[in-house]
Length: 221
Image (tube, rainbow, N blue to C red; front, side, top):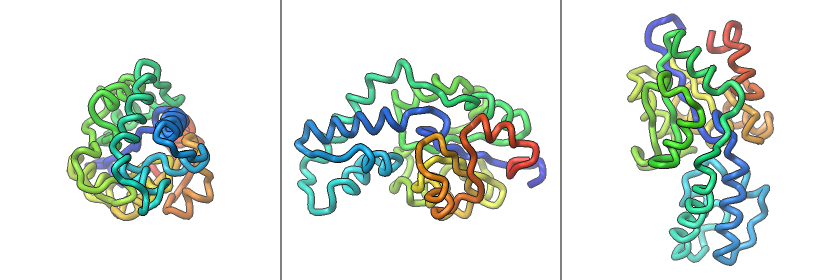
């Protein structure tokens, strides 16, 4: 890719911070409080979608949409209990710092905003390496639409062919593919390799530490 103007765009939940299963439990409980029995495995596969889309995906288009806001608020409150102890995935901060040192522009593309994003950034502990954050609040459509990744590229000032996108869900891979960016999948969010490859992953790694160890001979060399 050459040394000038390269961007590494990262999803955050399940990719850099080990939060997917915390989200699953919070959504499961929020659905339960609203009178819906949604299996956790179904919730897990929907994690990574924006809140309203996640609810629609799991309850269907013919649901009582009047409950959507309460369910989302329930999830937000339940998940907020974990903000002071969100666990970064091994190697997450080191990976971002190394890429930054190597001349990459590191951008986070996440549906998180506000206090949640602050908690995630504290968990990662590599603020000095992060150039910008593309939040769901900044775009009309969240993943799997390509907009969040396109917005991240705008912030980085880099064209799609000079960027990579790292994520852990099929929604990430579809968003990155739609934006014309090379996609790298990670397995640490709990989604199977075959699903990530089918959705557009060019390569799949165990997690941030594995990607860091492969930097010299992988897609980010």
